[in-house]
Length: 301
Ligand SMILES: [Zn+2]
Image 1 (spheres, helix red, strand yellow):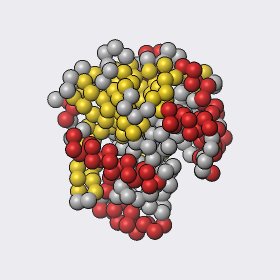
Image 2 (image 1 turned 45 degrees about the vertical axis):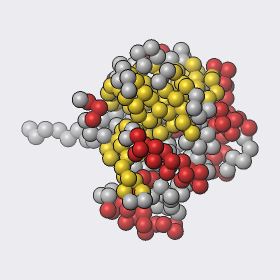
Image 3 (image 1 turned 180 degrees about the horizontal axis):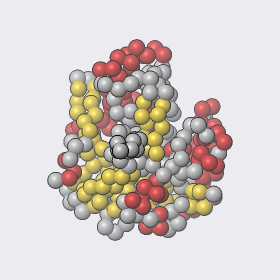
Image 4 (image 1 turned 180 degrees about the vertical axis):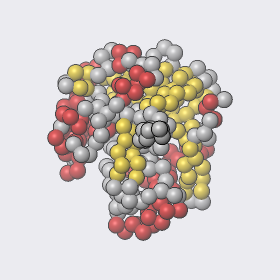
């Protein structure tokens, strides 16, 4: 008897040490999106984006888009960055066909963590794929956690002024999911400390108050840049191209360049929410742009 075909199997849980911390990246879910263009750069740059995809051995017409929250165990507290898609797809008609079902809790269990173990939930920003796993059926998914929300981000969605048409439903979601938790939240701004060793960095642009975070223990340092880059080829090699899901497009371009420069200057390990799993890598300069260098085993020595 020939062996059975079992279909695709993708790794979704990864853990390594950063000094005295343990860091786990967990792929909540993924979607295959229909085209890098016109999402990146609009119609005006369609041919360039297609050529870039070809030169980098990827398909311009179908791309893999993972959603990767991150856990940091400092030895004192367990900190979760972003919550994935959760049950948005089940609970909201508008999300069906757009977002996959979140698997964060089940996959955290594979890594040995229960939702009750999470002490702090940090939201990098308020987009659906980052807030979706906060509540299920109106109940907090991480019952013992306190929250850290970006102050500028919270203010933007809570006020609801100047929300562009494409984000109107996002605003509804934010008001329903995040705003009720504000009484258990600390509002943070760039430069603020989350817990000792973890600090917020201004990454405004992709969303009005997007925060990145540096994570440091025993002289080892990395950054979680969240959605600073939407794609590991296009955002790095053409950081100047506008991305349709960036809320403030020019600011997002400036932020990408500033953060990519910081990362290359300091040779930081990067965790990115939408980078290829395990979502970890380095950035190198390439002419006037950059390249993503996927993590190998640098953190496993
Ligand atoms: Zn995102």
